[in-house]
Amino acid sequence: MKSQKDTQQQLAILGPVKDRVEYIDCETRPQACEQAQIAAVPTWLIRGKRFVGVKELDDLEVLCHKEVKK
Image 1 (tube, one colour):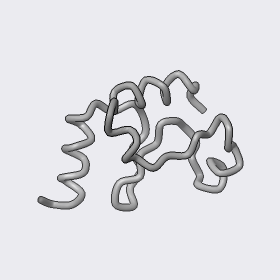
Image 2: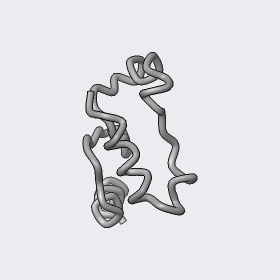
Image 3: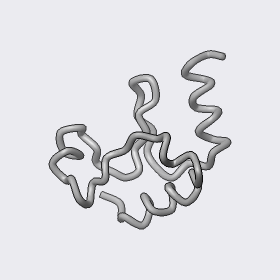
């Protein structure tokens, strides 16, 4: 599993919207991550598909729009 550093980097990128994103802290809740089959952090679950790695806000917007087909 990638380091907690990646999660902290992702939260910093999210900035003020991070409180609107539901996430599992794999460092403090490893069993929850195991149950969710999260092998790397961060892992994004968007409309049932997994995307692994730190994402910029623009990239997340594109992924969400493509998935929602707006």
